Image 1: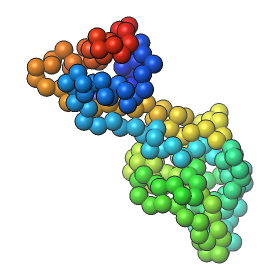
Image 2: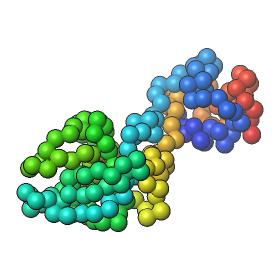
Image 3: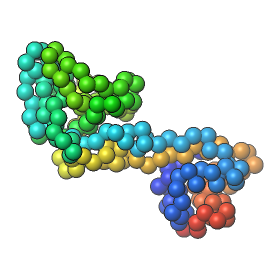
Length: 188
């Protein structure tokens, strides 16, 4: 059974950390098979504001974007047709591993111009197969804010193996009740 941490907190009043909740579930005989934490995986990605877009001086299909990351203003080389001044997108700094490709960004020149990060597509973020355009975020997305938070991907999902003798834990309310009985809060 999979349940989001926020969903569990709708049924259990607790300030316990995710690790504590997972440990207690295991102690109760509910094996935690996996915790899917996209927020942690996407922690390095932030909202970037494209300030200026000019053609790449040495390539017809590339542009040079000036991006405000909230911490600094950097140059990014981009091949997406939807890159334009004024848009907000997902920025990945140098050193970030891109989830959809597994590549780690390095500082290097592309046709004589150095880029200091990347504006990401949905495929690069592991969200879909769309690689034709970069992700366009809402105009009110705060520059420098974590992408996972803005996109609603910061809620960890707990995957629990429920055995046949624990049918009371096939719903989030039963799991919340067990955690409360184990001293980890009180049911709502």
